[in-house]
Length: 232
Length: 378
Image: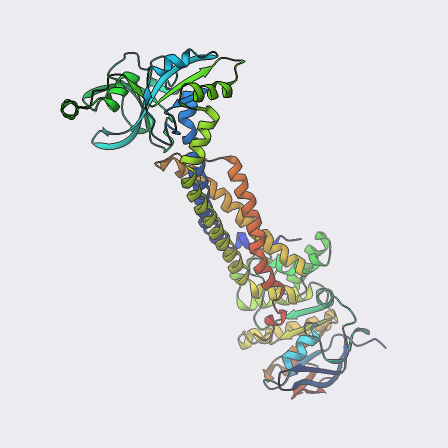
């Protein structure tokens, strides 16, 4: 049986303050298969962002275990010391606002990570063109970010998150800044990517109307997480 | 790998150019200050170099004729000429005057010299030297006086027969040259009323001509220091070699002024350094969100530090170029001599590079400590 794209076991995160210890994540366990797209929901202050930053290897958990495609990356401490390299090579990020680099053009934004990963110019240019074609913005490759619409920018951000062939994409409210029509279009695209590229995705969203696009829901409340499969 | 520094600069090129010009003007002022300092030293040596004497003989117990006043009888020159090894000895006078140039009063230093002897103006660019013993003068181009102009000095009118370029006194005032006899009359001849009053007081009229200094050249193979010592001992005059006179002028006469300029320059360099550091810091802080995103998607610190340092160095470099252009354009507009040296420019370049690197450290600190999680949850 193929290893899950991401597996989290008994993950804890505590923040120490002067007066006491604040437990934000309280023993979370779940796993996502390759190509599975999951909705992460929860009220404000429930620990969504903390969980997302831990899954993104930005924030170190207090204890627990995390694996990517069967390879342990955290077990009570980081197994791979260079978490930035891990993010560069294995993870993709999509944000609420596109968070693209304004002084780079579309192609440069997309090819930045492959260039850092030592991919040849021929390879990364080819990959960028493929992604732009795939996302329907092939004519925008030399455009500066400021000249794109909100929907186009978010597509470029999606292309950037895919440029390093990630195993998991973490998306933080990627449709929040878009109107309903564009939000649905982006969600369709994310689902298509997840299925076709076999990438696991965790998407934070508060929009229940987007539920049909997800395979599962990760519901976090007061640091506890429950997973509900909605599509077999 | 994409060069993030040049990409960011080209994205906001106008802002970068304006900032570079602004910092450049500040650096230009630093160069001008250094130029003023250099100019003071050049000016101080200018007159000495023009005279090109081996010895300066002045009144006993004085360090004249520039640092202190000095008077001695002109005929001393005959005694000096009689000393073994002295090739030539001639009297000279130096006097500060105010002259009327087309309705504008200018302060000048009048140099009196014996025609055809030491002290003749070396850099005549228009006209000729003084040929007649009376009523001819040579002026410096800086005064803007044309050949043939008649200028009133004392009781007489003098015709401008020659124009020099770059002839200035140790204090930067333009020089005018007169024959020694004219200069002596101008400096020492009393008016009729004063002479009458002096006679009534019982003060005798001084008939022997007076000069401020006697300058001498020495034949080859003679020891200048020894001759100078002999003059001090046996002629009861003070005597300085050309080098000693240069030291008196550069150390004693302009030392305080040059220290003042030096202090201003140091303060200006410190102020420029602080401003450059602040600009670089602000440039980095302005990109802190982009830096957080870059860190989040996995860009190593090295690439981020490289971007900040490259931008700092580019800003410093272009500001330095702008500063040099600015300094060279405006240096000629200053009333005093401004001497811009490539060595000073190079020194400033090294300072700018150092300041750019040090100034970027604050920005680097902020960038390295930027939390990548900033990019999430906005």
